[in-house]
Length: 147
Image (tube, rainbow, N blue to C red; front, side, top):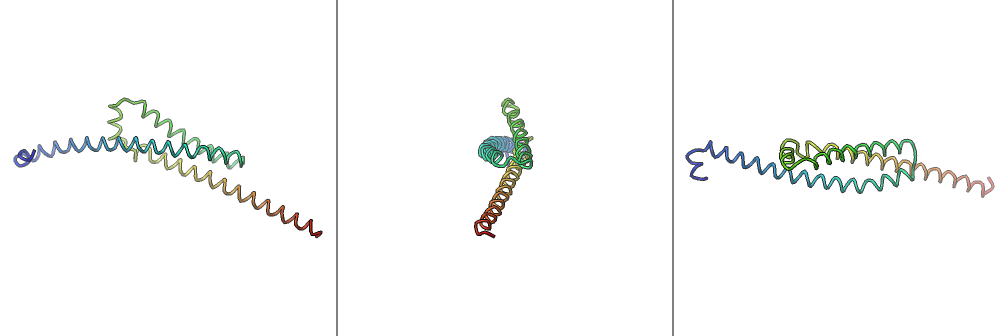
């Protein structure tokens, strides 16, 4: 390769470009598989919490937030299953043409944002419950004091 690079650098750059293309394809494929697995694990952690807070605080806003979260998760699952059903050649091509950052990163970020909205709704509902308890406690204290 060194001798060839001295006499014909244009051929070496072509060969190096092909090798680099293969390296990038392999790295993108590995990143895609790793990030999809991380996203699935993240979703597995989100779902029980979403179920719990939707049962604890069954308000219309909570139902809407959980429904939006589930919709984002379904989009991700649809795309991930579609990718896994493809053959090896299609995986190789998609690793180059549609890496994780272009194909899945946005939907995973949307899932995280929807999960945060569910958590925020749960926090707001919890604060409202605490405020209601505080008001009832004040009323009970006033009644017990005879005022």
